[in-house]
Length: 167
Image 1: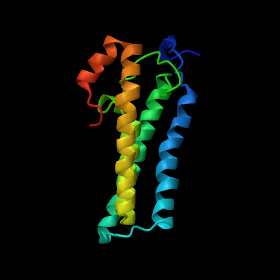
Image 2: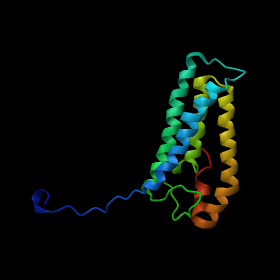
Image 3: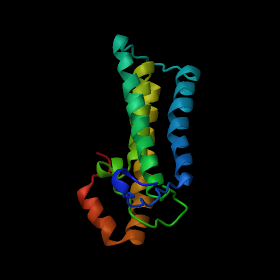
Image 4: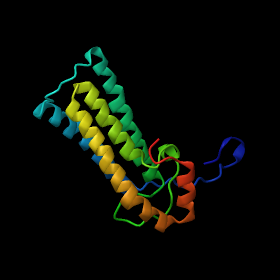
């Protein structure tokens, strides 16, 4: 085929996506959409908080948190670099939400869990969200960051200088 005027457009390189990254999006969804409501319904907070109509502010927080985590997973897929703890990183991914947070999947998951706490008016879910953050923080600081520093060297050190761990 030829474009208008008889000239062919320059061929574009195919966009590759590593679909192995997408299962990493299941973890935030399960942690928030399955575990959160199960905790709220199965273990009602002994100290309930009735946020009234303000509870509905939790819905956009849940959606935004999951969207942020999903955006990060998609960014890793497009970069052909699944966010796996079991695989040596090949390249440093700094696009998408990784421009704002070094841990957007974890951050989105915690935000969504805290949004659920508001939605359900549950102190237990608020504690769950904070516990998630604490576990993620320990995993990141003690395990992931040293591994990434060793694997990616100066590029990762520079990235850490520019982009905060959480926000």
